[in-house]
Image (cartoon, rainbow, N blue to C red; front, side, top):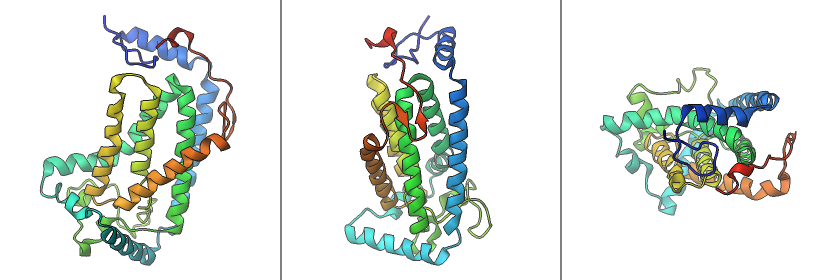
Length: 276
């Protein structure tokens, strides 16, 4: 019988479904109220973020002007043109279709999966990961409101193609459709910011030699968001800078045993696994 040590710092080689279930039960026992509180908090923050994004949803003029300014700045700085990256996907269904699917699905599913795993098995890592995600998202919302920015896919005059619309996989409607999405919130790229944060969290929370493969997620996300014409390079750079700033300020604003919403209590020591 093989074993997968989901609860230990490393990835052991013991896999027994019954053992996994028992580890999960032991990890979440007595934490029902905490789970409800976390779900409620995440829901409130998400709804607040969505509402805030709608503030500049109709600011078409500024968003388009800012888009051309960003492209001009990148050209002056000598950045590799986003159109060259998109050229890798155009007319190649076997690349374009998975890229669109990754953009549409991985952002929230990977975040939910990693956060859930951290909450169950690494509560101490879950706490700072959640805090940094909230801080990054809040800072991004402020930038969205101050600097509305149309994504490259809205600039066919500059040679960009809406890859998702081309292949019928778009998660967005028409710009003036009145939906709940602010399509002028390209800056910064939360796809890249979240992906990098989640990858760092997995590297920090585990000890297996394979943990570094988690960094493939932000690298692939960056390639996808640029290749599908949903973001500029600058969007990703600003997201990474905001994440770095949030991480630098976190120890000064949030005590180790607390969160921004009150004390959760000390993290229990895992004596049986402390030697791993």
